[in-house]
Image 1 (cartoon, rainbow, N blue to C red):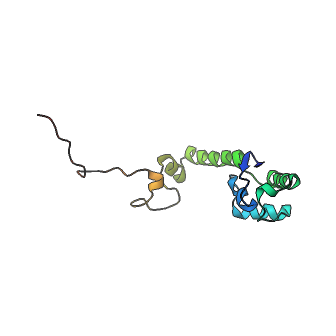
Image 2: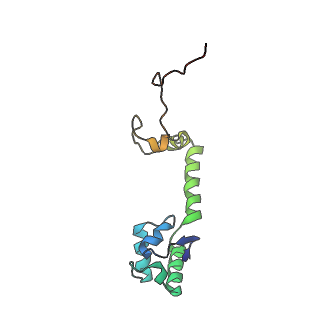
Image 3: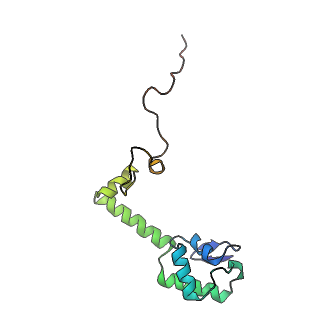
Length: 128
């Protein structure tokens, strides 16, 4: 099990897939890192030597912002938008989509479970 940037990479995965478990590294960055480290992308994580792991760590630390630092940067950017009352900040505050998607239908991921409005539910029987 390799541990890179505080994340445990699964040993059975290929290195190019395993690197995407790190927040801030997607498939494109993973292939860039492996090209710079001169490591075959299809190598399994368990087959990496200690020197190869250190080379990957060094490249990530030098060239990429990942995990906690990146999450802090993103949350600070959102907080700044909220503080200056930008339109996108208001959408973040309201829990609505921020990038122009429609909300009349869809947008359930951001809005949450639909709440029934009106007489759609039967009334509960009352005791007399």
